[in-house]
Amino acid sequence: MRSEEILARISALPRREAKLMEVCGTHTMSIARAGIKRLLPEGVELLSGPGCPVCVTPGEVMDAALGLSSREGVTLCVYGDMLRVPGTRRGDDLAHRRALGADVRIVYSPMDALDMAAQEREREFVFLGVGFETTAPGTAAAILEAKRRGTGNFSVFSMLKSVEPALRALIAQEGFAVDGFICPGHVAVITGSEGFEFLPREYGLPAAVAGFEPEDILLAVYHLLEMLAAGRPGLVNDYARAVSREGNALARAAVSEVFEPRRDIWRGLGRIDASGFGIRPELAEYDAERRFSLEIRPPEGASPCRCGEVITGRIRPEQCPLFERACTPEDPCGPCMVSSEGACAAAYRYME
Image 1 (cartoon, rainbow, N blue to C red):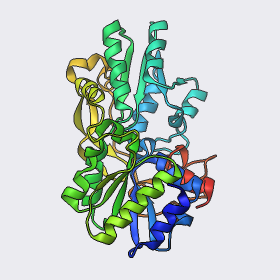
Image 2 (cartoon, rainbow, N blue to C red):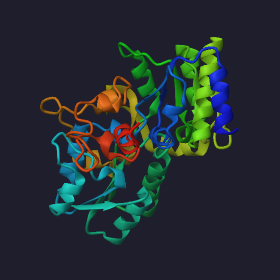
Image 3 (cartoon, helix red, strand yellow):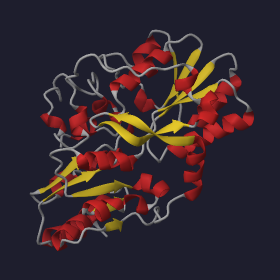
Image 4 (cartoon, rainbow, N blue to C red):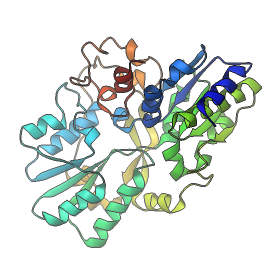
């Protein structure tokens, strides 16, 4: 269905006022790039949720990674988005540490880091495992392969997180005011669309699993507004070409073999039970937190960065007093301006 036809259907709906939240950084950037917010009728508002893995990683966790990067004999392997994510002190990021001599390397997958470890046995290689259910299977596969090969100088600092507990925590927050969710298609590839059935079943909130083209997102918006107009919340899978109801059982089995749920810290949401992927004790030799006795210390003082409020839908990026003034992609204060999926980066780049 073409965008014009979907927009016509949206305009024909009897109820068109709603706050809808996308829970995917790729959706956030696609919405901004295509100018979707400007195409929707007045009263339909799109908010960014905790769907950017870089953005939800708190500064104190980055501090631990920064400290690890500067240890003698340690090579830190990261996705490119992580290079400029600051810790609790502005300007202290992995790019800065690398300029000071730290061995920080950009990789495209954890397998790249594992291969490097096999080639340079005299160094310790640590992969920063960042992401949601989407990237957890690949990280699990790398750990299982390291065990199979007997690679003893490879470990993972798991920053991986699970989407469902975060959404539950978000909905439970005082003042929560979202009418429906655009759910992440790539997460649903692993969890299945059934991974989001709790939203209408338990909270009475309509949900639509969406792909990443503008038409995909507009179709999800239409179905959410249609359900709201009818007063019948449900779950619609608008990404059936890639997402089944059951998801990828093999990928989930690999994740369960390597990881166990743990209480984890989210920017803007605090500590959430069973929201993180902790490496199982029987695989402790591949757990960088245990291997290097990493400590996550509470930040000293409050940060002026309001990324936490942006990714929980409490403010829009331009409502942050730092936005476009003290905080730009060239000199970011927080991860939402750093990440290629960040709400602030999207708003700055496309001036929503």
